[in-house]
Length: 193
Image (cartoon, rainbow, N blue to C red):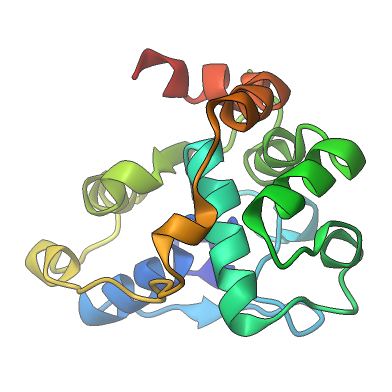
């Protein structure tokens, strides 16, 4: 969670938060990073600054599954995290099958924890797929003063190097995830693609 003078960024895992941190630092914005039990992610239930402008980003659910698994293959599974313990797999298909069995609608529920229930959302929900544009929109809406060019010039951060071929979808598996994550897909406009 990044806390600015008049705004708070809720860092949803695997949605570009490390890039946001670098971009706002490059843009000259002062912020404090709050860490919860050693984790930079803190959803709405952790946010003590509800009166400030709250913003976060989401990502197309299938892309989030792929990104999460790739990251874990590089960084390792967390043996203190119940989700990782239950869903860990050396294969992408195994990971997805575990999520569908143990944590169906995982992405949809996680997004709701960060951005609020539909109709009761935080002030701004942007998308990973338009991260720079949406970060600029959020910061403008919050009344922040910043260097827009510095944000747009910030290079990618925390990009997984695990081969894309290792995280390929069968159409059946992708359809099952789309079905499980239909709430997030519809809510955030990913069904319009």
